[in-house]
Image (cartoon, rainbow, N blue to C red; front, top):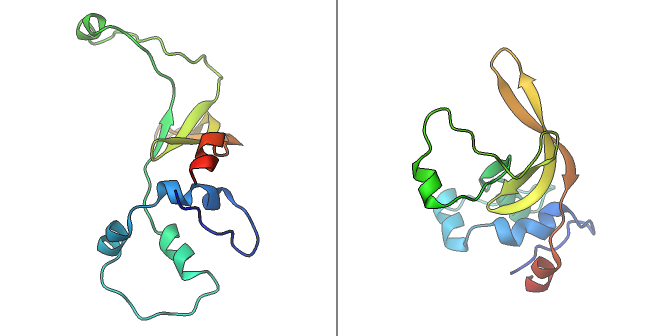
Length: 132
């Protein structure tokens, strides 16, 4: 896949993943609407477009494998054991790719909202770099 050129000589995580996360040019054109006159900005126009691309972020607490027969027997109150233990980091997945790991934290006790405190940013694998 195409890799974005580093901005002012800096190689960021965004540079490494932009080729994988970005939609096709046709999808970008449809999402952004008609062309607007160019406005000078200290940020590259291409980067500005990339920064507005929506991505899906999922936090994976764990997974489990079971036969279909066990799956259809599940009911209210059933407990499915996951492959992670309490306190182990959870995966932060963006558009299907693990980009970071973190720990679950309480954001707001009043509304019972949780969040993730990042503990590690995961770089691209060797296979990802070779494909780029």
